[in-house]
Image (cartoon, rainbow, N blue to C red):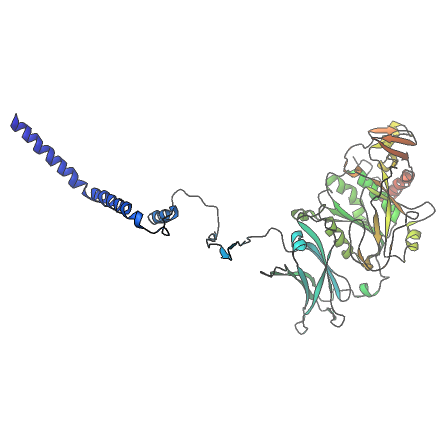
Length: 498
């Protein structure tokens, strides 16, 4: 038995030696690690306090042993810029922080158009970042580069006009006037050239400048007589409409265009700007007038990408002003739910002749209800009437101020607004209410339904705590407007729906 126990003891010893021999490398590493840890623990109290090991130092050491190619990592970044890791600078105990911009929050300049404004002047219309103009000092320089290489380029300082009175949102409307010295003729031989707008942000640390080609004139394309002969006008009256948006009523648009085509006469033209409001049914109403050359529609839906005030209407009306500046004697600015009117013994021609000494006059508003209707013809006949025939109640509530609209002689205007222009040469007249007024049917244009939900047959009405009186001024013109439409374009629009 003793012999057998010795045999088993020798066998266990050999097995233990074999295991230790097979794992000798790992055991050496473990013993070395323990030796290093014990050594650091022994020496740590004697190390100066200024020396320290942070978690980031350990992560750095560990990262040296990480795989060269990471596994199961998804990245969507392209051309990733390493993060700035420089410690902030400390000056006199103050930590100086820096900020680095990437990308663009808003464009320096968004060009809509540019037009020649005379023999030596141009106007550039567009948008620019509102914070840039509120808090910065952007500037503009205009350069004319002739197509003829023998002629030298000409430069001048651009004068910027901010037309939206601070109502801009992310973008504000900018009109840049480029007036070159009279001694430096611009395209004198009509040989062609290009206008370049140099838009500088005014940032003292970056001083970024964008050079933007805004206008190109091909050889023999400029009619200089247009700028030297003021009497050469294609239209007596031109309407510049603001941005049209929303689900507009085709019937209300039909009534408005028929009324004003008659009101302004044959030598008038209507420019409408579609910001999404001229949908298919509205366009069918306008089509006959477009075919007659009485209406022009501009598709401006692309401007919705740039967040400005009311679908960028300030930019739109300024584009219309400069586009037709030398083609019309008078230019009107009002909306498609507003109807112009002159007294019965007057005509639009006689009124405008009496105001010729003024570059601009404003027009007083007559506010009409678009919720209540006059039922003097009986309910059945009332519903067959045109909108301005049955919406005949005028709001007589006293208010400090009503909105006004206006008309200008455009050759005297450098930039314009929605309710009046503040950038013109010449006089403005504000007391024309005895000569011309406009009746405002607020909200009626955006209702694609029968507007008459409340019928009255009284001369005075109080509705929703507002006093109204019956005013048939525009109503009385209804039959004449209908007959004019029938004579001019026939019965094409008789089945127009709300």
